Length: 493
Image 1 (cartoon, rainbow, N blue to C red):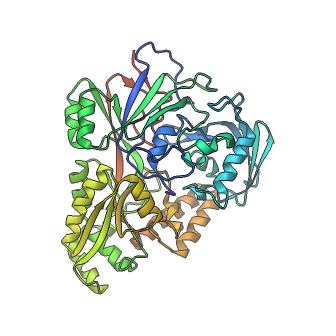
Image 2 (image 1 turned 30 degrees about the horizontal axis):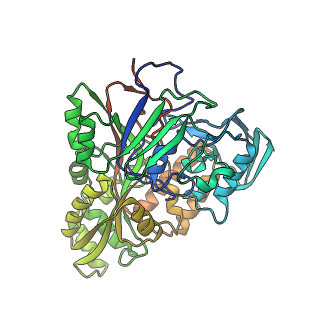
Image 3 (image 1 turned 180 degrees about the vertical axis):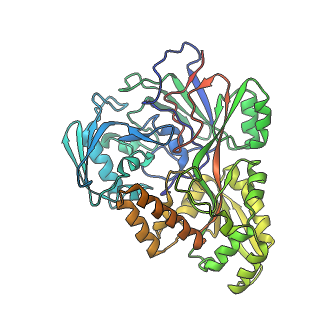
């Protein structure tokens, strides 16, 4: 989407890893609940794509570090002009794509122009909207000119949607991706696994593993069984939190509980009657008991949110009280809005456990105020095509796992179809504001606006729960972006 949706995000970084030789096991199997629809992160919104390819296969000019900071990627450094309109990126030398061809400034020009083109299929096309020109000054230097100053431009270039690709391999990118990363695509057995192998000619710090297998296990019970049988070495975003005490008590395993950028929401189609009435959307928000969902679907793991912003961000405003659980108020608002009850609506649920389990609880809560949510369980590809692109839904549950993505509310054609000109103007001001204090105040204002408009029902911040064998090292506890970056992962001696 213009945003990533799914459940996983763990990572390790090439520029943050240690140069250590390990003689033990050299391969690893990662359990993952969702299978990617394809492997091109620059043309789809499914977060499962980035989980496999981000930093492993594909790299960008910049990259996210384990603490969410932005560091060098293929660009080892960059300069910014005094007026803030020009970024000059200095590329790493000796970089080759996995097919042996050279990665140079022309590939960067191609990638950025492809992403911002009028016919671009990039799910995060807005990241590139401020670019007016991209020029290869020489083979190792790229100059990007912006329409307005943008201090967040290096941050934008760290997203998976901004990775550098080659025009020669673009036709096969969805099934046989060719990047510059520490791992190379090896094999895909659809419905089962994707296999990567170490890139022996990698330009940076080499990977510590020889092979990585992403094993797709959608069922929570099967995920538990696969870990207990030691068929899987790591399961990121483990889908059965009720089983965590068993892993905690077993010396073969360790449990990591961290945070993600994933705002989990009950998304509402703002253009579909009667949800085009703010009172009806507010009624939905007051009909929902967040803690009951966190306890019932997540077994207590998750932080309640009242707007689309991560609680660990210093600019976060706690607005949970504004949409607190109040079924009587919900009934009153529905009556004021003239809604005939029972109101029957379609609630579309994608595969992740938080959606399927949470959806059952939310449907029961909505029923108490006269809203009959008719559940339709769909696979991820169906959700992307029908719900996200086709906007054929009334309610749906999804985690938005990209960092600092409140700007999606400034896109009236986005899947929840919220159209507020004042909010759009506010986001435009944030984009060109360089003063940190001023940006902070505007971000707080933006959170309040979407809370006041009850655009969606905000549920909880998705935690990152990782179950791993005790000997696995180098996993990130938190997920500053949605990825399973394996470049610094290794087995302990």
